[in-house]
Length: 119
Ligand SMILES: [Cu+2]
Image 1 (tube, rainbow, N blue to C red):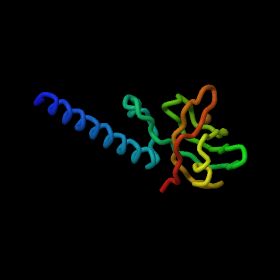
Image 2 (image 1 turned 90 degrees about the vertical axis):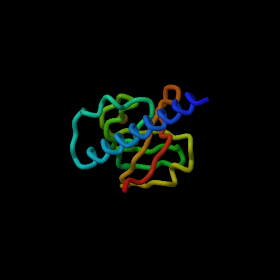
Image 3 (image 1 turned 90 degrees about the horizontal axis):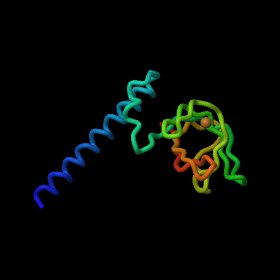
Image 4 (image 1 turned 180 degrees about the horizontal axis):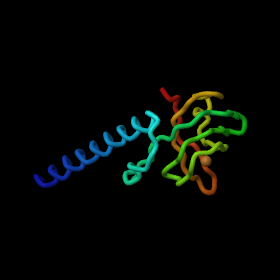
């Protein structure tokens, strides 16, 4: 039992370190610095990607975004159309908004799983 508790607290500590270093990397990137010093830590949890909404098509459930590099999809920055399965996402943003979002593959289609206005 004692060793399990030790394992748990070590895991929590490791997660905290990963979370805070991710936040630092984000802060550095939004400060205008680019570079690949943080490539090592792209790991399992996808980071939010910066983007700017170009178009929201509620009927087709599609959002056009000019986005920065999406690490988890190994995609460089570009402007492209994303689909979403979640109607509520379409209500959160509108054309011209700066956003942070997460994208994932759903079969052969790239979808947005999470989006929020960037502050
Ligand atoms: Cu793209």
